[in-house]
Image (cartoon, rainbow over all chains, first blue to last red; front, side, top):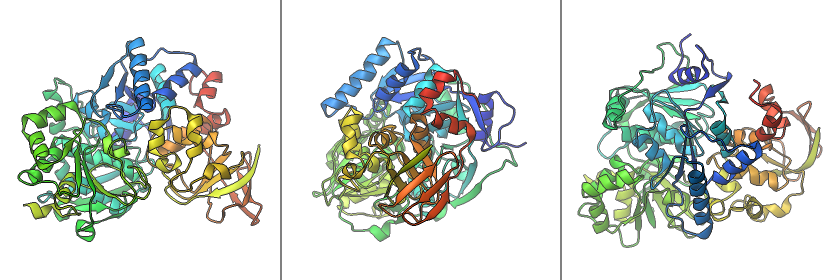
Amino acid sequence: MPMTITEKILAGAAGKDQVHPGEVITCRVDLICIDEIQIAIFIDTLDKLGTDAVDKDRTVFVIDHFCPPTNLHQADANRLIRKFARTHGLRFLEGSIKDQLLWERGLVRPGMVLVATDSHITTCGALGAFAAPFGPSEAAIMAVQDRYWFKVPESIRCEITGSLPPFVTPKDIGLYILGQKGTTFAGYKAIEFCGPMVKNLSMDGRVTLCNMTTEMGAKNGIIAPDSVTEAFLKARGVNACPTIFSDENAGYAETLAVDASKLEPLVAAPHSPGNVSPVSQAAGTKIDQGFVGSCGNGNMDDLRVAARILKGNTVHPDTRLIIAPASREVYLQALSEGLIEIFLRAGAVVSSQTCSVCAGLEAPLLAGETCITASPRNFKGRMGSPDAHIYLASPATVTASAVKGGITDPREFK
Amino acid sequence: MILEGTAHVFGDHINTDYIIAAKHKSRLSNLDDMVEYIMEDIRPGFIKEITPGDFIVAGINFGCGSSRETAPWVIKKAGIAAVLAKGFARIFFRNSINIGLRVLRVDTAGIRQGDRIVVDLASGKVENRTRGDLMTTQPMPPFIQTILDAGGVKNYLKTHKTFDL
């Protein structure tokens, strides 16, 4: 029977020829990533299981939220994960957001089963892996056992055609889908992005699309590997790029079609990622803070579009703009391209490679303030005061708005 | 097993940042310290309204947002016996099962704040004693029910060395 790419990956990991949506299976987990936010429960679970035999090859431990820590509790959490990793000789990485770092370093491969204690690990599905979030208790069990239980999700197929107009970005594609379909339509399902537009999309753009599936309720987002994937992996010294794709007549719960040529810059107004409207409807809303960064939009495509808008301009005197490259590698690349200088000369603050403003870990908002952000979520209170307002938008829209001091269509900056 | 308690009604899309605000998740390392802030941004002082054994009653997409296990933990530690909702977000649902917080999918539209609710876990029947309504919970796959009945995945693995599907 024909299968979708997600079904094929799970079937392979379960050692079965065939799986069906809804089926509960046990399968191998290829890579588990745990962070400092969830390490305490991870360790507690190991204690309760009476083991500390964590698989060295299948785990990676990171610090990416408290990077650097801003209070004693955060510093303590960091110490806990560093000590745990060191004591047990486990892989430990810091200085980058995991959802950027893992794929950027070539650790994510097509066909892999990857889990993390992070709702945005869905991002890594851009490499053709099954990448889904789980809690730390489960991650601990996966780290010490051969196999774990999964329920095979149904899949949604999203075909994207056309090409993005200037200053309209993959973020706007995700916002468009959220606006049309809401934040629960993909509940428990896999979302597969395909079509000619996706085939021509950079890895940075693919990553943004997959990142946004979390807010759609999805279990995982995925893009089948192709020549772009192969070239990307080869450049990182990974020569194997397994061919894996959805079968011609595979069954889908739903099929969506998006024509990228018809899109415009969008925003998601407070307090839901699904509260989407054209930027023109929110235009002029005073902006106190802008943020370009996060697991979905802190990569080179994002920083380059921000630099295009900021070059020769300055951040509005009543607005603060924070830019956080998602990884050390992005930061270094941005430095070499002169982008960091453009940001600084424009009056932006360049922060460290961490979740930062997205989760209110830096630059919290006061009551009555409004932030426009390229990060994934705008829940009430997320960035500080519950009486603050958060708009989601593309890095282009965020940057344009930071220059003008109010929500602005980036196309004004041709 | 029969559960009985007061319904504390919330709306749709109650996300994990509402359940326990991000600023507390990063500020506090001890769950006991976090419990008092449960639902603080949308219902300040909620912790004081809870009598152990009560229910949280909600609409669709309860627990959406972060994968942080502290969200269901805080609910369980606050003394909530079960969360009744029209629907749950995926990660929260799994996390709840794994820590033994009962999550029941049921049509909660007719339940109002303060209603007296009785849940018969064996039959799946939910009775609203205040209004005289009767609802039925959506059954869970037997394997998942076994984990919940064991009190969570860690307890399950004490008696079952592997996952017995």
